[in-house]
Length: 524
Image 1 (spheres, rainbow, N blue to C red):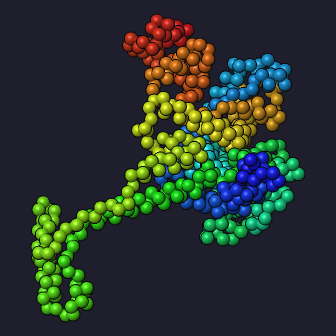
Image 2 (image 1 turned 135 degrees about the horizontal axis):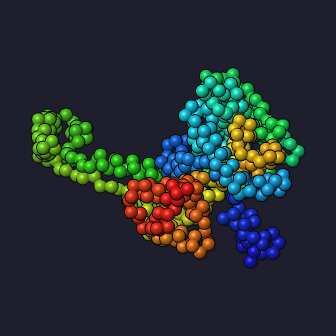
Protein backbone atom coordinates (compact mmCIF):
# COMPACT_ATOMS: atom_id res chain seq x y z
CA UNK A 1 0.00 0.00 0.00
CA UNK A 2 1.47 3.33 -1.02
CA UNK A 3 0.91 6.79 0.43
CA UNK A 4 -2.63 8.12 0.29
CA UNK A 5 -4.07 4.65 -0.15
CA UNK A 6 -3.15 4.52 -3.86
CA UNK A 7 -1.62 1.33 -5.17
CA UNK A 8 0.39 0.92 -8.32
CA UNK A 9 0.68 3.76 -10.81
CA UNK A 10 0.37 7.24 -9.34
CA UNK A 11 1.44 6.30 -5.82
CA UNK A 12 4.40 7.89 -4.02
CA UNK A 13 6.89 6.21 -1.68
CA UNK A 14 6.71 8.94 0.98
CA UNK A 15 3.66 10.15 2.85
CA UNK A 16 5.22 13.61 2.82
CA UNK A 17 5.01 13.60 -0.99
CA UNK A 18 1.39 12.43 -1.15
CA UNK A 19 -0.73 14.73 -3.29
CA UNK A 20 -4.08 12.91 -3.12
CA UNK A 21 -4.80 11.91 0.49
CA UNK A 22 -7.28 13.93 2.50
CA UNK A 23 -4.59 15.09 4.93
CA UNK A 24 -2.05 16.24 2.35
CA UNK A 25 -3.91 17.19 -0.82
CA UNK A 26 -4.57 20.76 0.29
CA UNK A 27 -0.98 21.25 1.45
CA UNK A 28 0.70 22.76 -1.58
CA UNK A 29 4.02 24.44 -0.77
CA UNK A 30 6.40 26.10 -3.19
CA UNK A 31 10.17 26.12 -3.36
CA UNK A 32 11.41 29.65 -2.72
CA UNK A 33 14.94 30.99 -2.66
CA UNK A 34 16.01 32.33 0.76
CA UNK A 35 15.75 35.98 -0.33
CA UNK A 36 12.52 35.54 -2.30
CA UNK A 37 10.64 33.82 0.51
CA UNK A 38 11.42 36.57 3.03
CA UNK A 39 12.20 39.96 1.49
CA UNK A 40 8.78 40.70 -0.12
CA UNK A 41 7.01 39.91 3.17
CA UNK A 42 9.60 41.15 5.61
CA UNK A 43 7.93 44.48 6.50
CA UNK A 44 4.56 42.89 7.21
CA UNK A 45 6.08 40.18 9.41
CA UNK A 46 8.26 42.61 11.34
CA UNK A 47 5.41 45.05 11.98
CA UNK A 48 3.32 42.23 13.45
CA UNK A 49 6.19 40.92 15.58
CA UNK A 50 6.88 44.40 16.93
CA UNK A 51 3.21 44.87 17.77
CA UNK A 52 3.28 41.56 19.62
CA UNK A 53 6.37 42.52 21.65
CA UNK A 54 4.90 45.93 22.49
CA UNK A 55 1.54 44.65 23.69
CA UNK A 56 1.95 41.09 24.95
CA UNK A 57 3.65 40.16 28.20
CA UNK A 58 4.70 36.67 27.02
CA UNK A 59 6.46 38.01 23.90
CA UNK A 60 8.05 40.95 25.70
CA UNK A 61 9.20 38.68 28.53
CA UNK A 62 10.74 36.18 26.10
CA UNK A 63 12.82 38.89 24.41
CA UNK A 64 13.91 40.31 27.77
CA UNK A 65 14.84 36.88 29.11
CA UNK A 66 17.08 36.09 26.13
CA UNK A 67 18.66 39.55 26.20
CA UNK A 68 19.49 39.22 29.88
CA UNK A 69 21.04 35.77 29.43
CA UNK A 70 22.99 36.41 26.23
CA UNK A 71 24.21 40.02 26.46
CA UNK A 72 23.25 41.26 29.91
CA UNK A 73 24.36 44.60 31.30
CA UNK A 74 28.15 44.39 30.87
CA UNK A 75 28.97 42.63 27.62
CA UNK A 76 32.73 43.10 27.23
CA UNK A 77 35.77 41.58 25.50
CA UNK A 78 38.50 39.58 27.20
CA UNK A 79 41.57 40.06 25.01
CA UNK A 80 43.26 36.84 23.91
CA UNK A 81 45.97 37.82 21.40
CA UNK A 82 47.30 34.96 19.32
CA UNK A 83 50.92 35.38 20.43
CA UNK A 84 52.01 32.09 18.85
CA UNK A 85 50.99 33.29 15.39
CA UNK A 86 52.62 36.69 15.92
CA UNK A 87 55.83 35.04 17.13
CA UNK A 88 55.84 32.72 14.13
CA UNK A 89 55.30 35.38 11.45
CA UNK A 90 57.67 37.91 13.03
CA UNK A 91 60.32 35.47 14.22
CA UNK A 92 60.39 37.39 17.49
CA UNK A 93 60.28 35.21 20.64
CA UNK A 94 59.15 38.27 22.64
CA UNK A 95 55.63 37.40 21.56
CA UNK A 96 55.04 34.97 24.40
CA UNK A 97 52.44 34.33 27.10
CA UNK A 98 53.91 37.02 29.36
CA UNK A 99 53.67 39.60 26.58
CA UNK A 100 50.12 38.47 25.80
CA UNK A 101 49.08 39.12 29.40
CA UNK A 102 50.68 42.56 29.43
CA UNK A 103 49.08 43.43 26.10
CA UNK A 104 45.71 42.10 27.31
CA UNK A 105 45.69 44.31 30.38
CA UNK A 106 46.61 47.40 28.36
CA UNK A 107 44.00 46.78 25.65
CA UNK A 108 41.21 46.12 28.15
CA UNK A 109 42.08 49.24 30.15
CA UNK A 110 41.88 51.38 27.01
CA UNK A 111 38.66 49.65 25.96
CA UNK A 112 37.05 50.60 29.26
CA UNK A 113 38.03 54.23 28.69
CA UNK A 114 36.18 54.20 25.36
CA UNK A 115 33.30 51.85 26.15
CA UNK A 116 32.35 53.36 29.52
CA UNK A 117 33.11 57.01 28.82
CA UNK A 118 30.65 59.13 30.86
CA UNK A 119 30.35 61.44 27.86
CA UNK A 120 29.10 58.53 25.72
CA UNK A 121 31.35 59.55 22.82
CA UNK A 122 31.43 55.91 21.74
CA UNK A 123 27.86 56.44 20.49
CA UNK A 124 27.21 58.81 17.59
CA UNK A 125 24.05 59.97 19.38
CA UNK A 126 25.90 60.14 22.75
CA UNK A 127 23.13 58.20 24.45
CA UNK A 128 24.54 54.71 25.12
CA UNK A 129 27.73 53.05 26.28
CA UNK A 130 29.12 50.13 24.29
CA UNK A 131 27.43 47.43 26.39
CA UNK A 132 24.08 49.16 25.81
CA UNK A 133 24.84 49.44 22.10
CA UNK A 134 25.48 45.68 22.04
CA UNK A 135 22.19 45.02 23.85
CA UNK A 136 20.27 47.24 21.42
CA UNK A 137 21.86 45.55 18.41
CA UNK A 138 21.01 42.11 19.73
CA UNK A 139 17.44 43.21 20.52
CA UNK A 140 17.02 44.22 16.88
CA UNK A 141 18.32 40.81 15.84
CA UNK A 142 15.85 39.00 18.11
CA UNK A 143 12.82 40.99 17.00
CA UNK A 144 13.53 41.95 13.37
CA UNK A 145 16.18 39.39 12.46
CA UNK A 146 18.97 41.90 11.64
CA UNK A 147 21.55 43.73 13.73
CA UNK A 148 22.80 46.74 11.76
CA UNK A 149 25.35 49.39 12.75
CA UNK A 150 27.65 51.99 11.20
CA UNK A 151 31.23 52.47 12.42
CA UNK A 152 31.60 56.23 12.19
CA UNK A 153 34.82 58.26 12.19
CA UNK A 154 34.32 61.54 14.10
CA UNK A 155 37.70 63.27 14.63
CA UNK A 156 35.95 66.55 15.43
CA UNK A 157 35.03 65.11 18.84
CA UNK A 158 38.62 64.32 19.86
CA UNK A 159 40.47 66.52 22.31
CA UNK A 160 39.55 69.51 24.47
CA UNK A 161 38.52 67.29 27.37
CA UNK A 162 36.03 65.36 25.26
CA UNK A 163 36.55 62.14 23.30
CA UNK A 164 39.83 60.23 23.31
CA UNK A 165 38.90 58.23 20.21
CA UNK A 166 37.30 59.23 16.92
CA UNK A 167 35.60 55.85 16.52
CA UNK A 168 31.87 55.91 17.29
CA UNK A 169 29.03 53.46 16.69
CA UNK A 170 25.59 54.19 15.25
CA UNK A 171 22.95 51.47 15.60
CA UNK A 172 20.70 51.63 12.52
CA UNK A 173 17.08 50.49 12.46
CA UNK A 174 16.99 47.51 10.04
CA UNK A 175 13.87 48.97 8.40
CA UNK A 176 16.13 51.51 6.73
CA UNK A 177 18.06 48.78 4.91
CA UNK A 178 16.16 48.30 1.64
CA UNK A 179 16.45 48.58 -2.12
CA UNK A 180 16.38 52.18 -3.40
CA UNK A 181 12.83 53.31 -4.19
CA UNK A 182 11.70 49.89 -2.94
CA UNK A 183 12.61 48.19 -6.20
CA UNK A 184 12.34 44.42 -6.50
CA UNK A 185 15.41 42.32 -5.71
CA UNK A 186 17.92 41.99 -8.52
CA UNK A 187 20.93 39.84 -9.26
CA UNK A 188 23.26 42.17 -7.36
CA UNK A 189 20.82 43.72 -4.87
CA UNK A 190 18.95 41.74 -2.19
CA UNK A 191 16.85 43.55 0.38
CA UNK A 192 19.16 46.57 0.33
CA UNK A 193 22.36 44.48 0.33
CA UNK A 194 24.64 45.04 -2.67
CA UNK A 195 26.40 41.78 -3.55
CA UNK A 196 29.12 40.74 -5.99
CA UNK A 197 29.14 37.80 -8.39
CA UNK A 198 29.95 35.46 -5.50
CA UNK A 199 27.03 36.64 -3.39
CA UNK A 200 29.32 38.47 -0.92
CA UNK A 201 28.04 41.75 0.48
CA UNK A 202 30.06 44.71 -0.78
CA UNK A 203 27.80 47.53 0.44
CA UNK A 204 24.41 48.52 1.77
CA UNK A 205 21.62 50.86 0.64
CA UNK A 206 20.29 52.70 3.67
CA UNK A 207 17.44 55.20 3.80
CA UNK A 208 18.50 58.55 5.18
CA UNK A 209 15.42 58.51 7.43
CA UNK A 210 12.86 55.92 8.51
CA UNK A 211 9.78 55.67 6.30
CA UNK A 212 7.65 56.33 9.37
CA UNK A 213 9.27 59.71 10.03
CA UNK A 214 6.51 61.95 8.67
CA UNK A 215 8.51 64.98 9.81
CA UNK A 216 11.44 63.90 7.61
CA UNK A 217 9.58 62.92 4.46
CA UNK A 218 12.21 64.09 1.98
CA UNK A 219 15.03 62.01 3.48
CA UNK A 220 12.73 59.00 3.92
CA UNK A 221 12.65 58.58 0.12
CA UNK A 222 16.40 59.06 -0.31
CA UNK A 223 18.93 56.21 -0.08
CA UNK A 224 22.66 56.40 0.56
CA UNK A 225 25.13 53.68 -0.43
CA UNK A 226 27.57 52.67 2.30
CA UNK A 227 30.49 50.33 1.54
CA UNK A 228 30.97 47.29 3.73
CA UNK A 229 34.53 48.33 4.62
CA UNK A 230 37.32 50.68 3.70
CA UNK A 231 40.04 49.86 1.21
CA UNK A 232 42.29 48.62 4.03
CA UNK A 233 39.59 46.49 5.67
CA UNK A 234 38.22 48.74 8.45
CA UNK A 235 34.50 47.94 8.96
CA UNK A 236 32.06 50.67 7.87
CA UNK A 237 28.70 48.85 8.03
CA UNK A 238 28.19 45.87 10.31
CA UNK A 239 25.29 43.62 9.34
CA UNK A 240 24.70 40.48 11.37
CA UNK A 241 21.90 37.92 11.26
CA UNK A 242 21.37 34.21 11.84
CA UNK A 243 22.02 32.32 8.60
CA UNK A 244 19.34 29.68 8.13
CA UNK A 245 19.97 28.92 4.45
CA UNK A 246 22.79 29.29 1.96
CA UNK A 247 22.79 32.48 -0.15
CA UNK A 248 20.70 34.35 2.44
CA UNK A 249 21.26 38.10 2.71
CA UNK A 250 18.70 39.28 5.29
CA UNK A 251 17.67 37.97 8.68
CA UNK A 252 14.67 35.68 9.08
CA UNK A 253 12.42 38.31 10.72
CA UNK A 254 13.23 37.40 14.32
CA UNK A 255 12.72 34.57 16.78
CA UNK A 256 8.94 35.05 17.17
CA UNK A 257 8.11 34.59 13.48
CA UNK A 258 7.59 30.78 13.58
CA UNK A 259 5.28 31.01 16.61
CA UNK A 260 3.57 34.33 15.89
CA UNK A 261 0.23 32.87 14.83
CA UNK A 262 -0.05 30.57 17.83
CA UNK A 263 0.95 33.35 20.20
CA UNK A 264 -1.69 35.64 18.70
CA UNK A 265 -4.34 32.92 19.13
CA UNK A 266 -3.27 32.41 22.75
CA UNK A 267 -3.60 36.14 23.42
CA UNK A 268 -7.09 36.16 21.92
CA UNK A 269 -8.14 33.13 23.96
CA UNK A 270 -6.62 34.61 27.11
CA UNK A 271 -8.49 37.88 26.52
CA UNK A 272 -11.76 36.07 25.92
CA UNK A 273 -11.46 34.16 29.19
CA UNK A 274 -10.61 37.36 31.02
CA UNK A 275 -13.64 39.12 29.54
CA UNK A 276 -15.88 36.24 30.61
CA UNK A 277 -14.48 36.35 34.15
CA UNK A 278 -15.08 40.10 34.36
CA UNK A 279 -18.65 39.77 33.10
CA UNK A 280 -19.38 37.04 35.63
CA UNK A 281 -17.86 39.17 38.37
CA UNK A 282 -19.87 42.26 37.45
CA UNK A 283 -23.24 40.58 36.98
CA UNK A 284 -23.22 38.59 40.19
CA UNK A 285 -27.01 38.66 40.77
CA UNK A 286 -30.26 40.08 39.45
CA UNK A 287 -33.77 40.72 40.78
CA UNK A 288 -36.65 38.97 39.09
CA UNK A 289 -39.99 40.83 39.10
CA UNK A 290 -43.33 39.00 38.66
CA UNK A 291 -44.38 41.47 35.98
CA UNK A 292 -42.74 43.10 33.03
CA UNK A 293 -44.28 46.52 32.50
CA UNK A 294 -44.31 46.55 28.75
CA UNK A 295 -45.51 42.96 28.31
CA UNK A 296 -48.33 43.35 30.83
CA UNK A 297 -49.43 46.62 29.26
CA UNK A 298 -49.45 45.07 25.80
CA UNK A 299 -51.49 42.10 27.06
CA UNK A 300 -54.04 43.91 29.21
CA UNK A 301 -54.00 47.40 27.88
CA UNK A 302 -53.69 50.33 30.24
CA UNK A 303 -54.21 49.19 33.81
CA UNK A 304 -53.99 51.53 36.75
CA UNK A 305 -53.32 48.65 39.14
CA UNK A 306 -50.34 47.31 37.24
CA UNK A 307 -48.89 50.76 36.80
CA UNK A 308 -49.39 51.51 40.45
CA UNK A 309 -47.56 48.31 41.39
CA UNK A 310 -44.56 49.21 39.25
CA UNK A 311 -44.46 52.73 40.65
CA UNK A 312 -44.58 51.36 44.18
CA UNK A 313 -41.62 49.08 43.40
CA UNK A 314 -39.57 51.97 42.06
CA UNK A 315 -40.35 54.14 45.09
CA UNK A 316 -39.52 51.24 47.41
CA UNK A 317 -36.03 50.71 45.99
CA UNK A 318 -35.37 54.42 45.72
CA UNK A 319 -36.22 55.12 49.35
CA UNK A 320 -34.67 52.06 51.01
CA UNK A 321 -30.93 52.42 50.38
CA UNK A 322 -29.93 50.85 53.67
CA UNK A 323 -26.20 50.28 54.23
CA UNK A 324 -24.27 48.47 56.95
CA UNK A 325 -20.55 49.20 57.23
CA UNK A 326 -20.55 50.61 53.70
CA UNK A 327 -22.31 47.54 52.23
CA UNK A 328 -25.78 47.69 50.76
CA UNK A 329 -28.50 45.78 52.67
CA UNK A 330 -30.90 44.43 50.11
CA UNK A 331 -34.68 44.53 50.71
CA UNK A 332 -36.97 42.88 48.22
CA UNK A 333 -40.41 44.20 47.34
CA UNK A 334 -43.31 41.76 47.65
CA UNK A 335 -43.36 39.45 44.62
CA UNK A 336 -39.61 39.89 43.78
CA UNK A 337 -36.93 37.24 44.16
CA UNK A 338 -33.11 37.20 43.94
CA UNK A 339 -31.28 35.05 41.35
CA UNK A 340 -27.50 34.51 41.18
CA UNK A 341 -25.51 34.55 37.92
CA UNK A 342 -23.37 31.45 37.48
CA UNK A 343 -20.62 30.97 34.89
CA UNK A 344 -22.06 29.29 31.84
CA UNK A 345 -18.72 28.64 30.11
CA UNK A 346 -16.31 26.44 32.06
CA UNK A 347 -12.62 27.41 31.99
CA UNK A 348 -11.29 24.41 33.88
CA UNK A 349 -9.00 23.43 31.01
CA UNK A 350 -7.66 26.92 30.39
CA UNK A 351 -4.53 26.49 32.53
CA UNK A 352 -3.56 23.22 30.82
CA UNK A 353 -4.24 24.65 27.38
CA UNK A 354 -2.26 27.80 28.09
CA UNK A 355 0.65 25.72 29.44
CA UNK A 356 0.71 23.58 26.30
CA UNK A 357 0.70 26.66 24.07
CA UNK A 358 3.48 28.31 26.05
CA UNK A 359 5.60 25.16 25.83
CA UNK A 360 5.17 25.26 22.07
CA UNK A 361 6.20 28.92 21.93
CA UNK A 362 9.15 28.36 24.30
CA UNK A 363 10.42 25.48 22.20
CA UNK A 364 10.23 27.62 19.08
CA UNK A 365 12.25 30.50 20.51
CA UNK A 366 14.83 28.36 22.30
CA UNK A 367 14.13 28.83 26.01
CA UNK A 368 12.45 26.67 28.64
CA UNK A 369 8.73 26.93 29.30
CA UNK A 370 9.50 27.97 32.88
CA UNK A 371 11.69 30.84 31.69
CA UNK A 372 8.91 32.02 29.39
CA UNK A 373 6.12 31.84 31.96
CA UNK A 374 8.25 32.55 35.07
CA UNK A 375 6.31 29.71 36.71
CA UNK A 376 8.60 27.18 38.42
CA UNK A 377 5.96 25.59 40.61
CA UNK A 378 5.68 22.38 38.58
CA UNK A 379 9.39 21.43 38.41
CA UNK A 380 11.95 20.04 40.84
CA UNK A 381 15.69 20.67 40.99
CA UNK A 382 16.64 18.00 38.45
CA UNK A 383 14.08 18.97 35.82
CA UNK A 384 14.76 22.68 36.30
CA UNK A 385 18.50 22.19 35.88
CA UNK A 386 18.00 20.00 32.82
CA UNK A 387 15.75 22.62 31.22
CA UNK A 388 18.18 25.44 31.99
CA UNK A 389 21.17 23.48 30.66
CA UNK A 390 19.38 22.89 27.37
CA UNK A 391 18.39 26.53 27.00
CA UNK A 392 21.90 27.60 28.08
CA UNK A 393 23.34 25.79 25.06
CA UNK A 394 21.15 27.90 22.81
CA UNK A 395 21.99 31.06 24.74
CA UNK A 396 25.72 30.35 24.47
CA UNK A 397 25.47 29.67 20.76
CA UNK A 398 23.55 32.91 20.23
CA UNK A 399 26.14 34.82 22.27
CA UNK A 400 29.04 33.39 20.27
CA UNK A 401 27.33 34.08 16.94
CA UNK A 402 26.50 37.65 17.92
CA UNK A 403 30.02 38.18 19.22
CA UNK A 404 31.59 36.98 15.97
CA UNK A 405 29.17 38.78 13.66
CA UNK A 406 28.52 42.09 15.46
CA UNK A 407 30.81 42.65 18.45
CA UNK A 408 34.12 41.49 16.93
CA UNK A 409 34.02 43.99 14.01
CA UNK A 410 33.38 46.83 16.49
CA UNK A 411 36.32 45.69 18.61
CA UNK A 412 38.54 45.40 15.53
CA UNK A 413 37.65 48.92 14.36
CA UNK A 414 38.32 50.45 17.76
CA UNK A 415 41.58 48.52 18.27
CA UNK A 416 42.87 49.79 14.94
CA UNK A 417 42.62 53.34 16.29
CA UNK A 418 43.95 52.31 19.70
CA UNK A 419 47.09 51.00 18.01
CA UNK A 420 47.80 54.57 16.84
CA UNK A 421 46.48 56.53 19.82
CA UNK A 422 47.62 54.42 22.77
CA UNK A 423 51.06 53.25 23.81
CA UNK A 424 50.39 49.52 23.61
CA UNK A 425 53.24 47.15 24.52
CA UNK A 426 54.52 45.89 21.17
CA UNK A 427 57.92 44.26 20.65
CA UNK A 428 60.31 45.56 18.02
CA UNK A 429 59.45 44.38 14.53
CA UNK A 430 55.81 43.69 15.37
CA UNK A 431 53.72 42.99 12.24
CA UNK A 432 51.29 45.66 11.08
CA UNK A 433 47.85 45.52 12.61
CA UNK A 434 46.13 45.64 9.21
CA UNK A 435 47.92 42.46 8.15
CA UNK A 436 47.21 40.50 11.35
CA UNK A 437 44.12 42.07 12.87
CA UNK A 438 42.77 38.58 13.58
CA UNK A 439 45.75 37.83 15.84
CA UNK A 440 45.86 41.21 17.59
CA UNK A 441 42.05 41.49 18.02
CA UNK A 442 41.40 37.91 19.07
CA UNK A 443 39.16 37.97 22.14
CA UNK A 444 36.41 36.20 24.04
CA UNK A 445 33.25 38.11 24.91
CA UNK A 446 32.07 37.97 28.50
CA UNK A 447 28.35 38.00 29.13
CA UNK A 448 26.19 37.33 32.18
CA UNK A 449 26.79 34.24 34.28
CA UNK A 450 24.71 31.09 34.14
CA UNK A 451 23.86 31.35 37.82
CA UNK A 452 23.11 28.60 40.35
CA UNK A 453 20.09 26.52 41.21
CA UNK A 454 21.77 24.76 44.13
CA UNK A 455 24.93 26.80 44.89
CA UNK A 456 26.39 24.30 47.37
CA UNK A 457 26.24 21.22 45.15
CA UNK A 458 27.09 23.05 41.93
CA UNK A 459 30.09 24.84 43.41
CA UNK A 460 31.28 21.55 44.89
CA UNK A 461 31.00 20.00 41.44
CA UNK A 462 33.01 22.87 39.94
CA UNK A 463 35.78 22.30 42.49
CA UNK A 464 35.84 18.57 41.70
CA UNK A 465 36.10 19.36 38.00
CA UNK A 466 39.08 21.65 38.55
CA UNK A 467 40.81 19.13 40.84
CA UNK A 468 40.31 16.36 38.27
CA UNK A 469 41.65 18.56 35.43
CA UNK A 470 38.28 18.36 33.69
CA UNK A 471 37.87 22.13 33.95
CA UNK A 472 39.86 25.26 34.75
CA UNK A 473 39.37 28.19 37.08
CA UNK A 474 39.11 30.43 34.03
CA UNK A 475 36.30 28.31 32.56
CA UNK A 476 34.39 28.15 35.85
CA UNK A 477 34.69 31.91 36.33
CA UNK A 478 33.52 32.52 32.78
CA UNK A 479 30.43 30.38 33.45
CA UNK A 480 29.48 32.92 36.12
CA UNK A 481 30.35 36.00 34.10
CA UNK A 482 33.62 36.62 35.94
CA UNK A 483 37.14 37.23 34.65
CA UNK A 484 39.68 34.97 36.31
CA UNK A 485 42.44 37.56 36.77
CA UNK A 486 40.03 40.01 38.35
CA UNK A 487 38.86 37.27 40.73
CA UNK A 488 42.43 36.29 41.73
CA UNK A 489 43.55 39.90 42.09
CA UNK A 490 40.58 40.68 44.30
CA UNK A 491 41.19 37.59 46.42
CA UNK A 492 44.84 38.57 46.91
CA UNK A 493 43.78 42.03 48.03
CA UNK A 494 41.25 40.58 50.49
CA UNK A 495 43.85 38.21 51.99
CA UNK A 496 46.25 41.11 52.41
CA UNK A 497 43.53 43.14 54.15
CA UNK A 498 43.01 40.28 56.63
CA UNK A 499 46.76 40.15 57.29
CA UNK A 500 47.19 43.93 57.61
CA UNK A 501 44.42 44.09 60.21
CA UNK A 502 45.49 41.01 62.15
CA UNK A 503 42.15 39.31 61.54
CA UNK A 504 42.19 35.49 61.59
CA UNK A 505 41.79 34.06 58.13
CA UNK A 506 38.58 32.21 57.33
CA UNK A 507 38.66 28.54 56.41
CA UNK A 508 38.60 29.22 52.67
CA UNK A 509 41.91 31.10 52.88
CA UNK A 510 44.00 27.94 53.40
CA UNK A 511 45.44 29.23 56.69
CA UNK A 512 49.23 29.62 56.83
CA UNK A 513 49.88 29.37 53.08
CA UNK A 514 47.42 32.12 52.36
CA UNK A 515 48.87 34.30 55.10
CA UNK A 516 52.38 33.83 53.73
CA UNK A 517 51.18 34.72 50.26
CA UNK A 518 49.48 37.83 51.58
CA UNK A 519 52.62 38.99 53.43
CA UNK A 520 55.04 38.21 50.64
CA UNK A 521 54.70 41.57 48.81
CA UNK A 522 55.60 43.42 52.03
CA UNK A 523 58.66 41.23 52.58
CA UNK A 524 59.88 41.99 49.10
